[in-house]
Amino acid sequence: MKALTLALTAAVSMMAISSPVLAGDPAVGKLKATACVACHGSDTYPGIFYTLQLAGRNADKLTVKTMKYKTGKILHPMMNLSTAFFDEKEIEDIAAYYQSLGKPAFTSSLITIKGDDDAPTAAAAMPYAFPAYPVAK
Image (cartoon, rainbow, N blue to C red; front, side, top):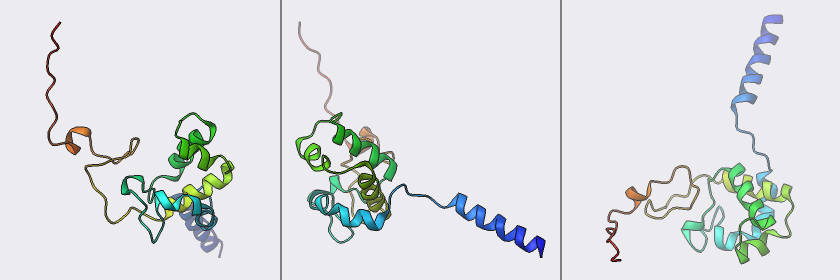
């Protein structure tokens, strides 16, 4: 009996350690993301521009970047205004919601968002680069 209890405890512990833990609550984030959906999409709508899709992106990185908009470290009038009324917990919930969506089905490897870890390199994304011409002095 003791061996069974020990085995069950070990199994539950391993599952808890191995499963990803989101800082926010995706269900609450879905409700709070109504202001974000027009540009960044949702589970049923891709957003205005697919380059702005947040689906499947890392929640921690989304939280950090969104907090930079909120605090004014990154200046973007629309994002600064949109994030001004959210607190950090709400931003974590929204980021967890977008991470829970998984990667979008249709994306382009030619257009990337700055900061994406899985983005192709600039050389791979742009098959032809303009040559550097010497400047006459």
